[in-house]
Amino acid sequence: MRALLGGNTAAGEAFVDGWWTSPDITQVTRFFSRNLSMMDYWDSRFGLFLKPFKVIRHLKRLNSKRQAKKNILAHYDLGNDLYQSFLDPKMQYSSALYASEHLSLEEAQVKKLTRICEQLDLKESDHLLEVGSGWGGLAIFAAKNYGCKVTTTTISDEQFRYAKNKIASQGLSQKIELLSQDYRLLDGQYEKVVSVEMIEAVGRKYLNEYFGKLNNLLKPGGLLMLQAITIADQRYKAYKNSEDFIQKHIFPGGFLPSLFLISKIITNSTELIFRDVRDIGLDYAKTLSHWHENLIDKKDFLKQLGYDDRFFNLWSYYLGYCEGGFLERRISASQILMSKAPHI
Image 1 (cartoon, rainbow, N blue to C red):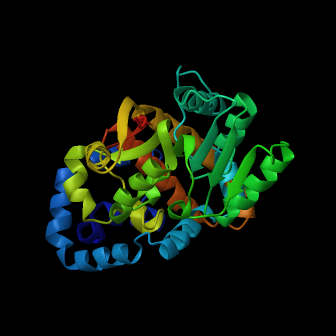
Image 2 (cartoon, rainbow, N blue to C red):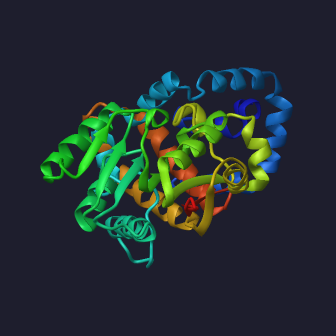
């Protein structure tokens, strides 16, 4: 009955509460993904009276400047120890790039960072703007390996403190300007702009503003690299007016655009031109598999830090749920290179 009333979300909540378990969460969620039309049917029939409450809850989390800070803190300020337990040493909380299936997580993340910098054609004379710092890994990598100046911004307090200390310890404080500022408040123009998996925190209502801001921050003739998680175009209509497990329990205010929606906004509202699009959805599935393995290996360590079984179940389900979605191609991820036409 719980699953009938809440569909996919309730099934995940039942796992978190210990009502069911599985030695392979990913395979279970792959089954859910293959049967989305059936799950949607039961959700629409039996969860109908709950839908207004779901929509209202999600609307309350829309990413205004004030609410965006609260939403980011709810996820990224859970403690750096948590993220250090399952991420690579560079603290990359985004898809790696597996040029070979035998690469380690650390090696694959370096491949990802290298490709981003190479696609941007970074030079020592460039000033790179990063919208969404994470824990500073990309900014440090670009400054150290390409010699460019970097300005990077985050609204997560934990990420800001970690990145500030990391930048200082690497002797890069003169090369990297770290800001604690909402992207909508940024000004100036830059030769190169990058935003890695920050778009998911923007929210549907603010996507036009986000791309408009990126457009204005990029100098004419400049390059923009976007790495984004996307929902399948065929799923977008059902997804855009719903609230899923991730939005409810992991990323409040989160929203996945479709590639069609991104293309439409860029075409209609910016001066940006597509140069290259690379699908890395299966790379993301492998990244999530590595994260999940690391999380499981560190379960006892996390319990010592105060993360209880319910919290562990939540994160275990989240990682398996996402991996299943990528493997079934219900969601994907892309690296999108764009340029801005030079003004004549």
